[in-house]
Length: 328
Image (cartoon, rainbow, N blue to C red; front, side, top):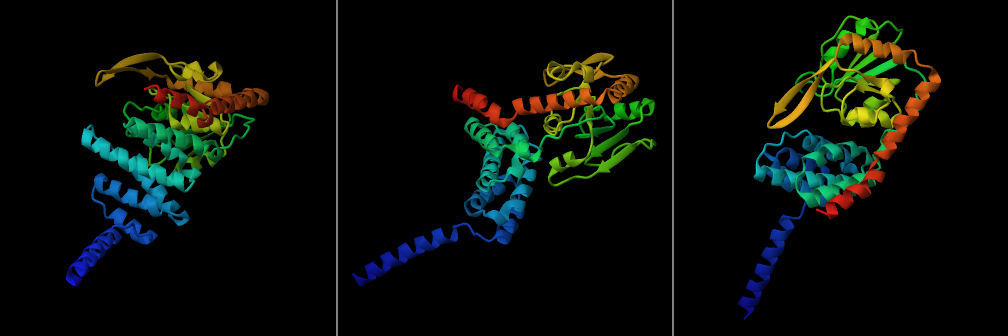
């Protein structure tokens, strides 16, 4: 009888030992090492679930690194990988939300676009709404048009998507006394013009680039008009100069749009879209036109950018998105 009782206690003790072995370790350094040792996203998914359970204030920098990892991950068209990615992405955002990391909000958008599981997408939208990320990009009234900021974006994107090369050809043709800031995460082509400043910096908190003291955001995009830099520039109050094509010509002021010379049809994986051909001289003429606008008009354009940013804020869009997801 005594032997049986001892055996039962040994079994229970063994089970408790096993559970104890799988309790997440709260030490930040240990969790960082374990996560960095993960060989694939399946292992990273398991690690972030443990991190979510033990994460505290001191984890914030580490969680930002994980969000960058998730946001930049190149997702293959494989169903099993997508399911694993969804878990990894979801618990990464849950962890950032648990720590009330408003500085992580810009990464949520990039990650949301990659997640395929509908209930995860709905919850992520809710968390984005809670983050109120316009606080990171506060409005500042612009009163002149003397400094033009351009973001090169992903230079690997084909056909000069953000219009960087065309803009560089246009700058020497500009007659006005203005300055240009070309912001890029990697080295880009340069021209010899004293009016151009190049900032090559891959910021950990990439929204810090909006602290640059510029007046106008210029992006003569050739296709794919809607983009995160557009939203961010409007949030900080910059009037937006873009190509006169859909969808941006449906909401941006007409006097800031650059007329394309023509459109070239293109097809990728049965998806049809148009690429705008823009003449450098047309960009230069529009820059001269904007540069000579009176201060009062620039201020009105700045206020309009703020208005659109507020209409597109998660605080206002969240209820609409949640309604759509509930009806799926």
